[in-house]
Image (tube, rainbow, N blue to C red):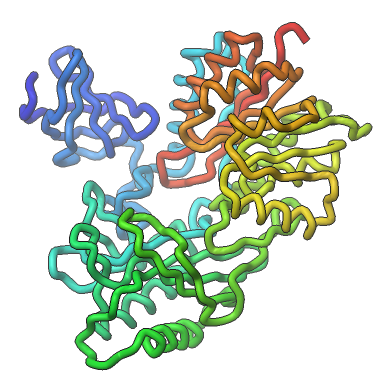
Length: 469
């Protein structure tokens, strides 16, 4: 087997995240974007140190696990939702099996304490936030608005039939791309750094059904087939187009954000309100949260309730009715977990590096009349040294790459009896659990929560306790 060789074979299993394993000449080849049981053809594009990777060319034969048709018309073209052709129960089995295999490597009794996976209350229409990109599907083709084409940095697929959002998103996307396409407004070209339209950000609360719509553009002069059009006229016309739509939800705000950053990401370099306000409210477990366009908030509101209920269940009587415990909520985001725990704690201290998220957390705590929550902006590694109150309980909910080793050392030195670790990337969790167990902790319970049906992603919750407690 050598680089450039064409091969075919059966996908024996899929490891997290999205790594199909095919046997070729007594060697394992990793082929992404595959499902267990598929017969696939691929070309070897990487080979070193006994490991090989293949680029998928064609699915020659479907897996017996798959449905005849995907639920989404964009499946296979759009870069997301790799598991769309699997029935939901098979998706859950696959994700739970992937996490268990990772946990068995580092947790000796993983099979005994693994509690499986809890499903999302909604399989479709579950997302409360989408970031769409302007571009074209083929070079010099008509304006597109949606997600990146699978395997492409440039090509964009207009996902006006996407199933992980509800119909309001699809109407807003379709109206927006039609409006700017008719006026021949150019998108921002990521290589030439020229153009006007960059992204469309849409957020919708599941409980209140309020909607925020934010158009992200450069500050470059508009080049258009319609001579003499001004930005204000263009944006007002777009706003009126949106307000004329018949939506199930209600538009709370229409915004325009400027972004001249070279990076292909949604960044806020100044936002103006075209209509309404720049926030809306969402509800989780009877608490109310104010959300702005760039606030961090779990993208599956109903799934987040399952996640936080699981965390609260795992905490159990660690926070008893005396409410005399000091709780650290590290990597606290907008303070959702902190506020859910606040009624059962003396004092909850949240630490988060994103300042806007910290400000949102403070506002939300005030909104929910919780006076025993404090939130600190800063890097966990640095902030821990400045907090005088020592914790009785720690909640960890780090970003995808897990906890910095030096921060983990400081967390371990507190010696709390129990802690909860919530992870959105089980491979990072695996690495951190190995360190925690080596330093005197044991894993008591493990559970997965499917926050992202149709995709390869999964959340994991672990309860840890000190062995010498």
